[in-house]
Image 1 (cartoon, helix red, strand yellow):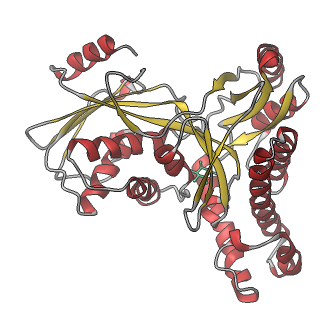
Image 2 (cartoon, rainbow, N blue to C red):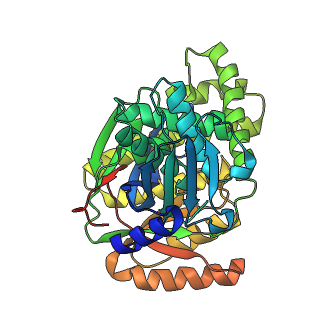
Length: 393
Ligand code: GLA
């Protein structure tokens, strides 16, 4: 959106246009799925699609928010002195949670705010539009109130909002990728220690194509929490027979020796996924460093199979996209990305084949599923930040 359009929109909504502009990206995860809350490794990157927040401080305690993405919700208003979760505040609860938790952590936020949001990440598509709102609000508060806060603190507070305010027991990956992303780099993150290695993503003649199933993710949250509980159940058992403190510590060799202690075949498969995915993620970094895109692609494919067969979080829409993608010309690898149960998949596709790829996968998807998928070519961008006049918006 152009500066003039933003000025106009802010003016129309709040009767003035004295705002500062902030941006937080969305993210894709290249590999390492459902490993973050198990203390394993993930390999995400921030993308150039994201959430813009136009924010200004008020003199009173009112917080007023409007999102271009949810015009039907209208102007949402609450008070700095009453920051409890409220269903009727819909998407604005993510912002409210951030303000609430930053205050609780002792940061001084003593004025109300006018906030206008507009985002170009498809909502609820598994590209972390919610973490993107959390982070854009977090850095807006940091800058407007001159908070002396480390970026990693904002990232952790974002995760707490998701877990304790919203009620999704997600890991740290999304907020980390969005808060710490770097243009053209992926991040190999150890979710237990938060040690992070930035790795340049050099795809040469290839693009990353995001494929959105456009499936409504109605059961996604409860299924997500169910997987997390299954992992916790497994960990309790395995702690008694090994010296691990989280599933991410379990190697493939160790798993073979202890898997029979697990209560049933389903729980065994869940752990099998976590263990194999964690190992694939480390191998993927090595493959990328060795410039072996072919190996990287194979690891992506294997990751999808494991999420489909062992962790069971894909479903027919994601499987149709990914399996169709595998059969197309110029495809290095493809897998679902994010939590699953709908949402998006990614494919690494030769630049020259992208157009044909989209046509073919799109047509087959429509025929099998009955509605359209949407495709985007992803660029890897920087993490959350204030946008200045010079920066290209
Ligand atoms: C969601 C969660 C992340 C992570 C992924 C699965 O995106 O928010 O923390 O668990 O699912 O890898």
